[in-house]
Image (cartoon, rainbow, N blue to C red; front, side, top):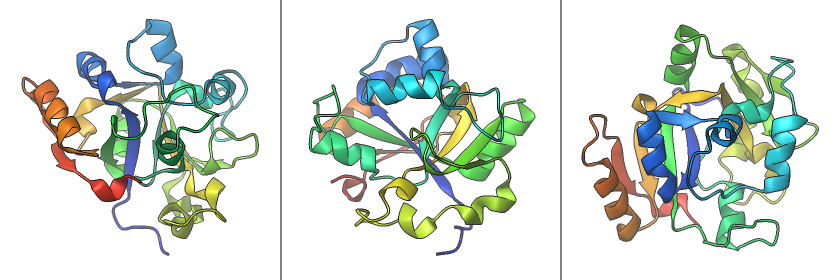
Length: 212
């Protein structure tokens, strides 16, 4: 599969993180969330989060840790979401996939914002939490992402490449979120209620095909 003409990126988080995201006018990296003590349910693997904070650096930016970046996938319905759905023993979080929301943005708009605001960015060719990923900071190399793996629904044989990530240093502004995908009507209502006083209101949609 060729590189999409207008690639989208997806950040997943628990719906109860949305108020602090709005209060901060955007998303912070895990490193900054820890520093600021921001509230909300943590859904990732704590050991991998720690590794991203203290061990895993980007080759394209050698003094930047993965955990100092806001992470996105190139697709919804990620491998991580599946682990939440089956309540994997690897996760301390046991709330399932329904409270998880997808924040969608445009890759090229994000890179343009990052360049304007002096934020470093990169993308990985596989799981950015592993010890052996490769990363790039050149849009001309987007074709090196395995887009067939990214969009695969049966990803058992391409699990690592499906988890390719886009990373932006420290902060991602709320104004770049274009769409919010949710699992059901209850979460849709909760998101709409949280957004009702916001100037920037992304489209909110029930996207069952983004879930397991």
